[in-house]
Length: 349
Image (tube, rainbow, N blue to C red; front, side, top):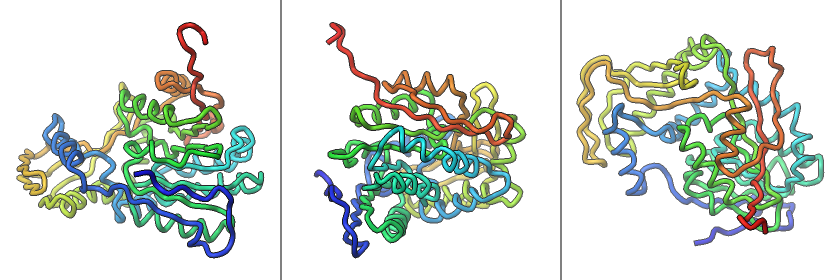
């Protein structure tokens, strides 16, 4: 089924007339998703895919994390967007902003304001797994921008890439927050390859990446004194209990986040303080977890320009522009702007 497309001519008036939301999938409502989760939990080490963080509670907790003094990435990316948004809009000439994993879209208005100032703002497409967040963002932004069309998609932003509105507009596809670091190396290239396949020759791709920095800075960012990250991490077990009828005892698990220097990534774990026997009814699974045997819930890889350029190259993208904070700043972050690499046949045609 092809989703309804936003109107090509922006309209004013009732914000609800400029808003449409297509619910493709929510966590737990697909057999292949159950199979994927079951296999991950039976792996070595057992894993829970990080997409399960973002139910409504998890999304709210993450927004709290972004305001913590230790957690620099959101402030660093926001500052970079504020400094470079006008340049990005001028370079891309985009009229539609597609945001993958939009969440609460707290940084999105920076780009939308720049597009509006340039007279180019037409449409915004938030894609997120949390329906409540997509609806909230859509309603807020149609109220804020009187000529903006919003077409929200609720679902997995990897699976539903082919369903993004395409015709008639220059699109800027944004994947912010260094969420790309949550993918393994092969997964990153595969994901970006899917994006490249969906991009037209005039489309551009904007990627936020957290840069390599001292381990103590990274450790503090993922082990905040207020314990919000620990609560966010344990909430993923609450999602398992609610969606998959599991019986995890949340307080029986310790949050642990460590930096692995060889892989250049943070790893987040939930480590049982004592032996745990967990029944997950929807997966027909009984999980035996000895004390100290952690469940891996997230990786967060860190990058530099060379690794991003190589990743783009492997995915069929070309790195056109690189926007980086002052190297003297401890919260170094970067925005990478790319386009689909031209397809050239072996004969040169």
